[in-house]
Length: 416
Image (cartoon, rainbow, N blue to C red; front, side, top):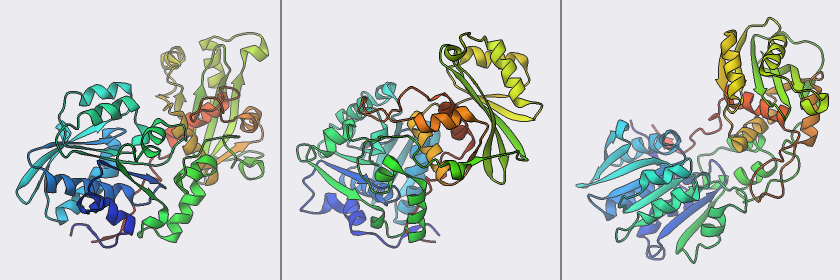
């Protein structure tokens, strides 16, 4: 049997029905921001499809996420069985990235778009839309969002936004949330308590996952600036070990530099916890002599020390070093994901969950933990580009090795 919603909070009901209520129907847009797992995404997506089907026929709409993959995972997959259960007919063209939705004899087309970078704006240019839905709008570039909004030229078109909070200097916070009256937008702020399906146990889990600015944003739902040390949850008593550990699997991560230091970490898996067993850290400024790719590669082989290395994860910008490793043919190379803020969030979660440990012999990464800080000058989330080389190789390792979607699971009240 298809999933059906069995319980909705007051804010979820308002998110779904605002367009049909006399006191709210005059708004041109709705903005839902706040904590993770607060129920805003699904209630908004159901409301968007229902509004479009009730208000238009033979019209085009846009469903937008940071990527089409994340849009399908976070919005489309949980939404489709629910709207089918309410009598909607769906024809999905996966290869062409659109859905045809029919309800009570009316059919509309919903195009899927990914707004991951500045070039994404060209994908939606030239369309005529009756409405647009943005999932996690704070993750999208302003150029893409504004191009999509400019496409909403059909009479009666409306704009639907949801997001988790970000830095208070973020353009969306300043241009839409703070100016919601000027934009004629209804703002609804969500907390975890606004999702009746989220148990107290799950709420506690999310509170354990985050700390610092990420806790303020994702748990408390505040637009808070990052400040201080990047990993305040790191505790030498909890995260540092002495001696040897017998491991079942080995991976090496590399942040490569010529003028800047190079940092490589050897990681071993034991008991479900990844241990940084040894490291190689070379600073040409500190040593007074630069090293070639071949010299760094020799250090890589020494770090591996005869162990069976599953892969070597390397900074994607280190093209010459990647080619050097491939040329030797001994190690499999994986290019690292270099999304800094996402990677920091993943490392923070892994530290809080006790899934990373560090040998007391790894003195450079331990030193950098104390020095790695958020920049107060940029007005956006960015760590200071100093004392960050071991931090970067650790971030590459976590982004590649850990499940990046493990805290993105869907939580809502359903009957099956």
